[in-house]
Image: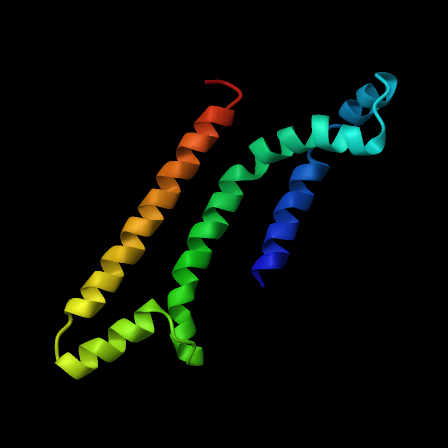
Length: 120
């Protein structure tokens, strides 16, 4: 499911590049591969980065929902430990881990966005 979202994000980013960029690359003698990697892709990355960041964070949060499918992961293990110990400390640790991980991802992506920003 996420592959389709990522594909649509990149498709939208590629389609947002003006036709004039491709024409200018052709006039400068770039072939299609050079045009894509040298001219189009750097612009696309700047355009799609916020959407990719949102999808990555959503993907991390959705992994905790996989316990419904009986796929062992951190939340499932924490739930089992909490049930065995009659304590919520394992769930709190898992929650803190998810929170910290998402904050780290958000901070890294925010810095990367600022680094690639057009106007800063």
